[in-house]
Amino acid sequence: MNWDDPTDESAAERLVGASADREDQAVEAALRPKDLDEFIGQEKVREQLDLVLRAARARGATADHVLLSGAPGLGKTTLSMIIAAEMEAPIRITSGPAIQHAGDLAAILSSLQEGEVLFLDEIHRMSRPAEEMLYMAMEDFRVDVIVGKGPGATAIPLELPPFTLVGATTRAGLLPPPLRDRFGFTAHMEFYEPAELERVIHRSAHLLDVEIGAEGAAEIAGRSRGTPRIANRLLRRVRDYAQVKADGVITRDIAAAALAVYEVDDRGLDRLDRGVLEALLKLFGGGPVGLSTLAVAVGEERETVEEVAEPFLVREGLLARTPRGRVATPAAWAHFGLTRPGPSTGGNGQQDLFGA
Image (tube, rainbow, N blue to C red; front, side, top):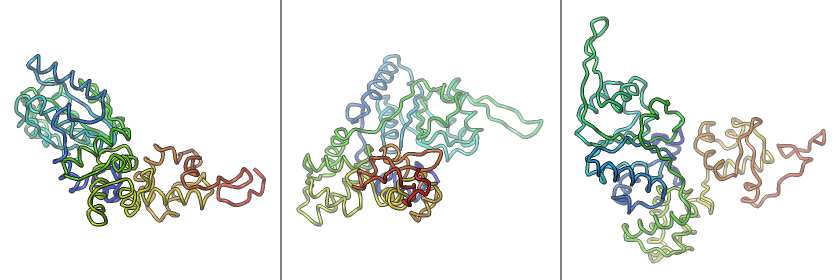
């Protein structure tokens, strides 16, 4: 199980999950900005990428290969499409898991047009033989196609037209250095600030023909985990609530009431997040407690707790991973309005017999 894998059902079905389901993909296609000027947030990345693309257009050459890293839902796919639009080039979209053999990659590369943009999502999950073929394709714009088997096998060089590879990954550390070094431009996508998400929400509301006030947008933005995809998903759910329960206008009170129905609290925690923290706080006195024990207490699989819930809780400073186990931070105690046990209390809430 992988928390950033769209095929992970536990992550995909969460309202605050960053993976995209089919509904998200359809809506994102309609909401996606068309150029860098329209793209909200990621100011440094936009500025640097704009220079790369302008310079390539001035030279009349294809743009350098681009590597985009960062958590799901921050706009890597959108930026790849913008790169193609800015270069006035077609785009081919595929993913690392779809390329399991070198022949799969050779078939894609050999059909590229000159200047075309190849977007390879989750590039770190590509098979090793295909990865090694990609080295030569990126650097020399050619691949060696093996014909035959055994001692009689022959490598036939196949020239490729110049193209731009845009690789996207949620785990840049898993990319081997030889592959990472072949990208001319590397950018890391950061989580969004609430003010940036408010702009995203206002833009999406306009495109969806939804009336929303500034306070309503701020309420949704504060619960969106710094991720535009989640902000847009919450906006659609709040829109549904406003249409059924109110006059269709999203205010702060309407947004708060709607998200309470969907069990998303004011910090963006959902049922699973709160279940993990409440078990840690109330059953184990804030820890430390082992991951397997915590998972049993929550009624979830160990992998679900570790890969679906914990990344956000750690990033928010609500939970810490230590060699002795999971520990709740003071911020977690404060969030639930609970008092942290004194030093004479053991990690499970029982009186420590040794007074430690």
